[in-house]
Image (cartoon, rainbow, N blue to C red; front, side):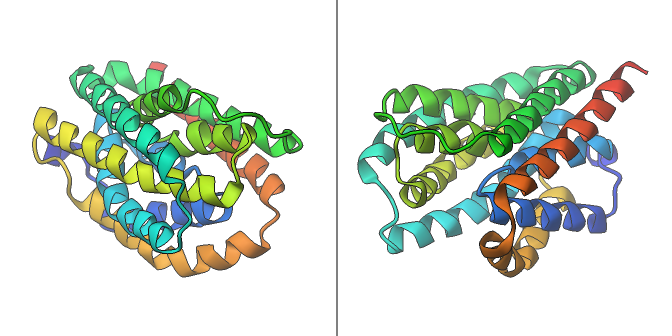
Length: 251
């Protein structure tokens, strides 16, 4: 059944993964939101979209987390509180989405992704917030993991931005969150596999290969791109695609 649902050629997934990685490299977030929004736009059901995005991200976050760990760019105290909560949230979100009727889930997930797009726009328009004490890390990880699994993305906008706004050093918070994301995505992927079966195929492979190809370019873009303006542009694109997905769900 699932093999007939995803009918797009692998080149489509390569392109989506390539563009999503460029966005993530420049912003430090939004890979999952951008790629899941695009997958739903080309007709992939939400649960399958989230499952394949998380399968691809398991590999990319493993490399990213290891790199940050070797570079001593991880706050291990925060990681020990963030990762287990993210795992629990990811498992719960994946289990709920996998059992939700595919067509009924489409407008709900599209509305969530639209909200994530608006959050990205808001963060691009707002000046940097003054630092505050970092609290409630576990609850942040639980909410971030749940939203990421249900919506196919959102871990970065929910977790990274909040930790930085609460006073965390940007570089160490990005490294810590990326490292914790591996555990969350692996748990969500395993849950999708257990509840839906082996539904990872060309979509996951295409997203992964496209992301790998874009990684060197994304590294350069991270240094040169006007981050706040790009956040507004990317957020606007996500909002537009999500609005289209909502319209198509009811048309």
